[in-house]
Image (cartoon, rainbow, N blue to C red; front, side, top):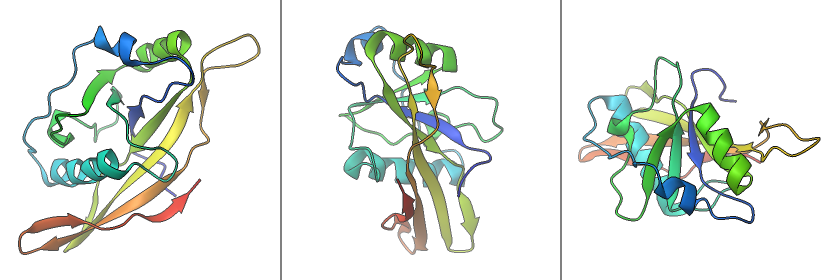
Length: 167
């Protein structure tokens, strides 16, 4: 079970209303070249998440990254390049504001890569930001997730099928 050191990646999954409008008012993060091995591995796994989704979340046209104080913070260097998907870096307050205005959001959590010789893994899980209404608070931590293994090959790292998935 992945817990410590997680970076939160928000997948815009509004219930009812579209999140496109609130995000259109914001400047998207522009992916840059990976600077570290961790950047490379997380970008490869996130590219797979963009392509096939996760155990409980289908691919989305926009992802939001929560700014946090974690030492292994996800940066633009760990984002995959995509012409179809935009990324946004927001604070927890900004994320909750979008949920309150646009409906419940499902977001991803992306752990730093764990590397052992020629293998590695990156954990990716989902949680929810709930639209605040009378009798209901904001965040709910009750999503699913998977560990995405990678192997180093002569041509570089390759992402394998997700493992240890939970819903």
